[in-house]
Amino acid sequence: MKIKITAWLLALGLAVPWGAQAEADFPNRPLKLLVGFAAGGITDTTARQVAEEMGQVLGQPVVVDNRTGAGGNIATAELARAQPDGYTLMLASPGQLVVNPLTQKSPGFDPNTKFTLLSLVNESPFVFVVPAKSRFKSVAELVAWGKANDGGLSFASPGMGTTMHIAGEMLSAFAGVRAVHVPYRGGAQSTNDLVAGRVDFMIDSLGAVASQVQAGQLKVLAVAGPERLAQFPGVPALAETYPDFIASSWLGVVGPPGMPPAVAEVLVRAVAQAARSPRYVETLEKRGSRIAVTGPQPFAAHLEKERSRVQRTVVKAGLKLD
Image (tube, rainbow, N blue to C red; front, side):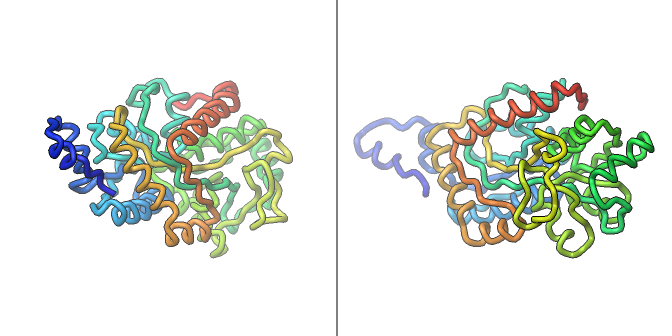
């Protein structure tokens, strides 16, 4: 997997600049994979699986580094400042690359930063979940109660500006009901409090809550994708009641701006192999997620589509996330 060109150049009597020599030996030390959310959540667990598989491909350890807070902005800002040598990467979420730059005045980094896109690694549909003992049997019941008890509803998310936060705010905008946002520092914490009944609902990826749903701790009231899921054929899609209500999640590996193409190419191949490994694919399937290995150009096209959707459905709805 390492690029071995230095010896060839020297054999031809050609000088090898220091930077090119460093690229030729890449990677020759451990890599760091930033995660903007707390340990135990879906982003963290995915990162650890991808990191392990990448490490085997690259022949160097890939160490997960959790930099939590500000809806992932702290990790994103660190990546924006990192040396573009390929040794610092990030497992990015929609909130970090799409929502926060569009909806926050000061995310902590230049919202126009051109990160080096490597590849998506998965996609996951969103579901509307409530505690198993919730009084609500449908989204319609929940909305009706919320309208009769203004401000009485609450919803959880892994942090300000995350896709889960946006999804909850979208319900308020589409259904005309006010729900109080309760942000946490990671998915594990928000899910645990939902199970305990400390908040009323959450709209999150099926992969993030699958184990709690299977254990009977949470129940799915609706699907937040454009259509019903095969896993829950009797559960309606929110779009059936609120047209254009679509929320889903994805994760992708990105690097700092200006990464050398030769280094980026090594990492693109490593991410692709990691995301296609049998162990990783098996884990995705158990969570209800799906593989989404794309490469840089399809990743970029996907981001543009996501930005357009958020601009249209969130920013124009007048939601303020600062």
